[in-house]
Image (cartoon, rainbow, N blue to C red):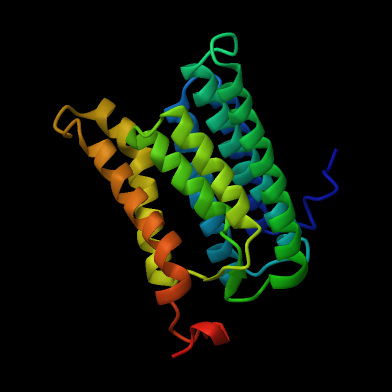
Length: 246
């Protein structure tokens, strides 16, 4: 039986749909292995960048922007929230510390709600623009995933970061899109973090610290863009908001 959407969706849409499936796998993995779940979130981020490249070279369909936002809800809203809730729950039992565990779940729920609202507004108002209002969901998810892989798994830290990102996603801070070369660098570092465990299984020549090293590099790059991007990153044809122009 032919699928109804097989003839209506393009290659870029297929990558986007795969991104959503990876997000689901990350949610399942969070209950078993937090580091694996974090790497799956990063894999979804790589797929999120790849679908834009495919769309520019192979064309897109009218459904593309809607599919992209729906997939991002799964991969960069629900998946990182589940990751944080799982890490907090693993570090503290509800019986021993009900307030902290409840805070982890609550922060995750707030994160998902903010991601849904932000992505809906983005699809309605900003799609096609070279800038976006509020912290991008992909950036927030990347920081949380890189932090878990780098070993920053203190429950209080993760809960605070998740709640802060939820608020920042709804803020009026404007971020320019990453330039192509910078997005490529970010994608390469993300891929290195994802593939390091396979490299360690394939050879003993790979230093044991290299996985955390790539995670720290990704955390440094993403936090640099998070903190400095709204003020200093404008250029290459992207115009800064009036309040930031010099």
